[in-house]
Amino acid sequence: MKTISVTTLGCKLNFSESSSIVREFVQNGFKKVAFGKQSDVTIINTCYVTAQAEKKSKFAVKKAKKVSPNGKIIVIGCAAQLNPEKFVKYDGVDFVAGTNFKFDIFNILQCNNEQKIFHSDVNEIENCDEAYSISERTRSFLKIQDGCDYHCTYCAVPLARGKSRNISIEEAVKNANIIAQKGIKEIVLTGVNIGDFGKTTGENFFQLIQELDKVEGIERYRISSIEPNLLTDEIIEFVANSKKFMPHFHIPLQSGSDDVLKQMHRRYNTNLFCQRIFKIKELIPDAFLGIDVIVGFPTETEQNFNETFNLLNDLPVSYLHIFPYSARPGTAASAIKESVPSEIIKNREIKLSELSDLKSYIFHKQFVGTTQSVLFEKIESDKKILGYSSNYIRVSVESNNDIRNKICNVKILNFENNIMNGIVLI
Figure 1 (cartoon, one colour):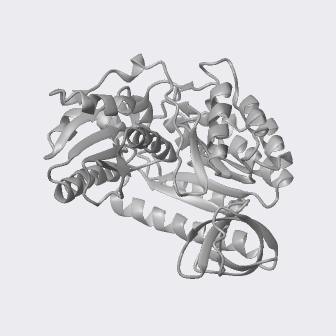
Figure 2 (cartoon, helix red, strand yellow):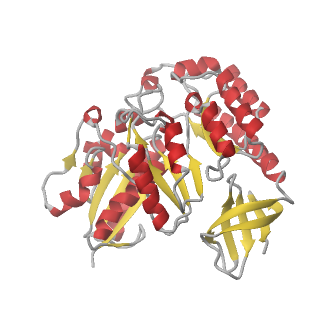
Figure 3 (cartoon, one colour):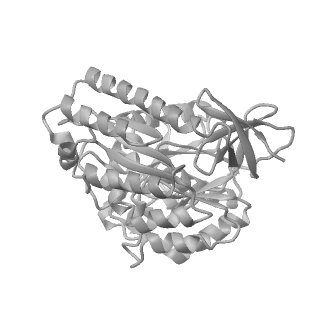
């Protein structure tokens, strides 16, 4: 039996696509093995968001070539779309498939074609390929949308994935039902700009979540990153009243300076962002709020950074996902002559990381002594099993029973080393 392995860099959307691509190979007689083990075919799904992510793709190719010198290596993903000529030169790479061809690689491989690059302009792409992950995990990443029309000045994703497009609500519900039939209890809705859902089908995101809420068998949904200007009051109110949509939001701020937000071409200001945060906390006091922040954007002054720090310090957020600015070729920001020295970027990153640790500690400590509903995911050791509460608290318990993929009530005992420890209530 032939074997296939995959490594995925970047976002949950990439993960959902990798899973669907590998599933086609498995359905055609391949056996999936872990990346790093010898395999007949290795797929490397790349990311282009940062320069570091692109470097990791090169390392992945080298590793695949080392462990599988006679195997086929296929490079796909955002970096492959934007730099196909670069990747095809790497030793061992058989072919590179851009955005419009990544779901065709099984057929391409069967044709024994000598062509090395399969590529087209992303602006020509009209369809949104369906994708969802099915694995040993208790949650699935369901792709509902692709591409983005926003063209923020720092972001290369629209260059790699094209314009905003989506599957239909009917297709999303169909896929959710398939996932439910596999016994998976939680779905994470993924895309590039999921709040923009409906551009190509005349529908909208609020209609989508209303229909998904009705799917039997799925007990939990999580909304992945959603733009503040697209996170409407009706969406927040719906989550507050839904038993299935979890009190967990991931919202990109990027900067707490209105001047920098304008330079970034973001479609909101800090006032609107704060309104969304306070609306969530008003209706869902226990909600987990993860926030994306970029430090070191070329025009970011010390005053701009302090505005960001002070804003986040004053807001009831739970966690900061911090990105040091990385200039990406082809973006408008890469042409800005000003730049922030790397040591200043690092210092700002450290300062925000310390704030994130403090926010996380404050958020988690309030739940010590409470009872939380936890969906368990994986075994950490002989008796330790890890899961997540409805509001995305990592919880570890000791259990002699395998309670993976089960939702249990857990009494939270303490918060240590960034994890809540508890006991399962019978």
